[in-house]
Amino acid sequence: MSNRGNFSSRIGFILAAAGSAVGLGNIWRFPFLAGTNGGAGFLFIYLICIATLCVPVMIGEIAIGRRALSDAYGSYNKLGGGKWGYLGLYGILAGVFILSYYNVVAGWAFGYFIEISFGNLLNHQDFGSFFGEYVNQIGPLFLFSLGFMVMTAVIVSQGIAKGIEAANKIMMPGLYLILIGIIIYSLTLPNAGAGVNFYLVPQLNEITSKTIFYALCQAFFSLSLGMGCLITYGSYVTKDQNIVKSAAIISIADTSVAFLAGLMVFPLVFSLGAEPGQGPKLIFVILTQAFQQMGPLTGRIVGGAFFLLICFAALTSTISLLEVPVAFLVDQKKLPRKVVVWSMSGIIFLLGLPSMFSQGIVPFLNKLPIHNTPDMLSLISDLCDIALVSGGCLMTIFIRNRWKIENLHEELSIGNPGYMGSWLKSYIHYTIMYICPVLLGIMSVLVITDKFFGLEWLWG
Ligand code: PFF
Image 1 (tube, rainbow, N blue to C red):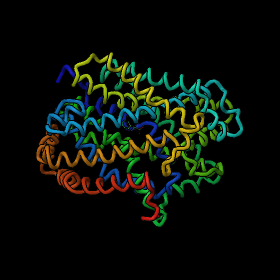
Image 2 (tube, rainbow, N blue to C red):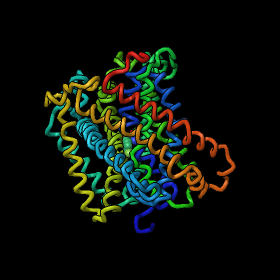
Image 3 (cartoon, rainbow, N blue to C red):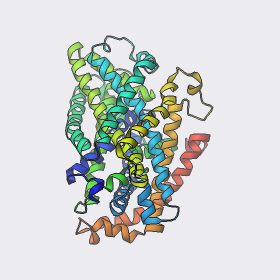
């Protein structure tokens, strides 16, 4: 085990896994999905998904990785044999495609950091059209995304622990501080209460099938589940660590950042008289407007710090995404780590180009003939969401039918002496044996049907 590298401490693992979880998903994707899907109703369903479906899946993945001490493919192969390794490959492939478009959005955030810090951003009038033009400036965006991929590759090539642990120790507290600072500011603005209402008071009759689909997919995405990321990180976890407790801390850290991001965005949206359902550009438009209102110097400092922290958060996620295929190729094909890191980064960057060009500059990539999916970036993101939820479902079926639940319980009791007699054991037992496979299986089928054919006829 030692030659694969380990996290140096319990806190090191928790920080790295929380760093993987906290990213653009929390600060960029969660608010815009909540904004388009009913606000408080979305938050309500999201929290239910985390508690009933996601935490058990997270625990299962970490346990599989720690037991098998291998990458996603190797772990399924070792514990399950037969064709189970393909389930690992399915996740690895999903991770590759997530990283391809994630890196493009990280390039947008990186670009905003540069623009705001150099004082070029806040003197604009219409931030909606600025965003539209910005994401079509291929030259700078190409460079920013490439820069982001290079930073990711440099850190991953150093091996686990070093770069990842260090980056997280600064990023996480900084992120909380700036979120809370902007929340306090936003709550003092006129009409902020309407935003708080929209975000925190659920109208149950506004919850539709779409609210549930998007909330579930977002919960999987946000916690980095269903694609072997936590199997890979779990394989670097030592036996003295309490997996259940770590999973609880990681989930709380991730969910609290998403929650705070919503609490920051919606009072601003309502006090600026903006539209909550404006999609992926939401935070880029709303926050720049808020920074502008803070005045030239304060806006530049707070805005610069904000986008810098988002870049850090995104970086700790891209690191974990790249680590998944890298660990596979290093473990299974015995290739040198550095060669694998740089070649995978190059391939993934190229795979992301259609997403980068899909915001208008190449018209064909922006008008795909697929239900509800206007552009290439959204299509890849939708396909990956499906892969995560179905991957999570198959993971629980793997534990239930192949590896066996007793082995999971045994692994979870290592580093956690009181586990066997606790209520947590029953919770994990019933969720993994029955609730997750059944509900995630049904949801996978419904989400696939909805994304490609539409399910409005079912329930709004
Ligand atoms: N959880 C990350 C976010 O919310 O930004 C995205 C992500 C990272 C998804 C790693 C999947 C993954 F394996």
